[in-house]
Length: 220
Image (tube, rainbow, N blue to C red):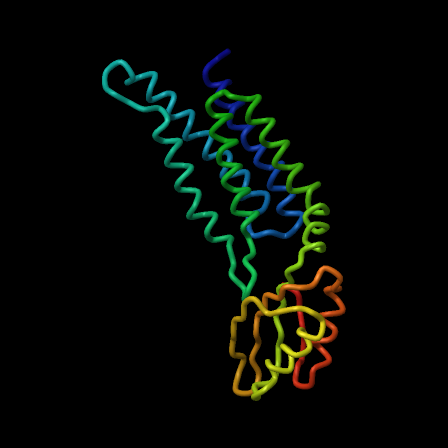
């Protein structure tokens, strides 16, 4: 096949596979959406094509490692992925999006290398993981004995102790606590609570919300 046609097909194919992952991220309104994933996959494919071309031209003249450029893509994508990760209280958001960008870059490298079958299979598995396994993830989380909540409350003595007593009466215990200020009289605490096997998360949150001085309770 003509060299330029092969390059064109690789780049287009990489962009389409990146779009497959990006569509799912865009649909869920994530920071790295359709265009970002397409560009990452396209750029990774281009880098691998250039690496193979450089090796073909200079491989017999000097010591060249065709995998070196691709390795820089793998490490460099970490900076882009870090921009999608947000730390809010006890929760960290964006890890799945960051991991998705890393996988998309790997898919681009595979397509640029001409390894179409691994690239296609990885893209399909990544899409299935993002699209179909969310329900399973929620089911597993619902069965977890740990509950992370953010509580907005008044800034007055004894309030945390009252919450602790409520949790103790439900055979639950506080494993981690983090404080955040929201003005002179309001602040929030992020709690990691270990529940009993028979405890209901919604019931625990409702009991905390009934404590005088508590404004809101949200699972994070």
